[in-house]
Length: 214
Image 1 (cartoon, rainbow, N blue to C red):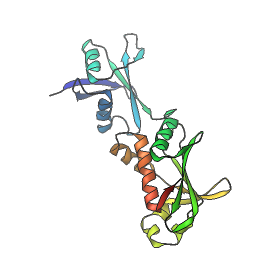
Image 2: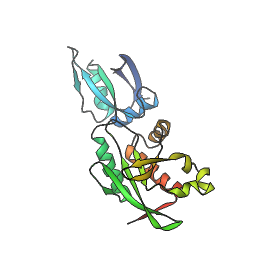
Image 3: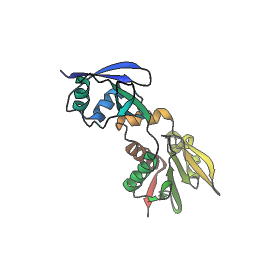
Image 4: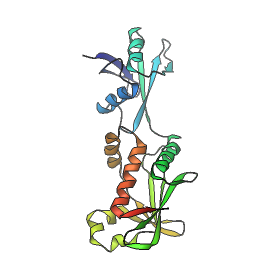
């Protein structure tokens, strides 16, 4: 049987009680809060010591035992959910680029591909993300017109997900991704956006039958 940890949700002022073990990491505590629906999948959590005068001091706790020890002194502990954002965006892109062998620009990563059915045309896949947003912006340039020709690309939804859109002088494929898809993948990868992006990109390349060239 675990220990009862009571937290004050600073977004709603509600008290939340969860069961934890002292050696559980704070990340694991946050996962419990996500699983309970107290914070959203795309959010991280900051833990605060609530002082007697009502002011809040951010905690640098690493395990649940730190929170339990503070609770034992009678000090209230607050939680504030924050959307995953800010300079994490660039960090995520660099991780994605390293994992896929992409080149890095100032605010994007990109790689070159070919379609197995055409050994002449080179496609450039680029990924951007914006501060405060989870959805990556993925472009494949030029637009892979073969998706409109062969039935299999309609069957695997490539045709419906590959939106024609101008990027500079090129007509490109802007790959449509929706929030529920991101939510599902964040749950699968325990909130790791780097792994979510890599999963999405690898799936797109497989669907479009693109292989990496250097």
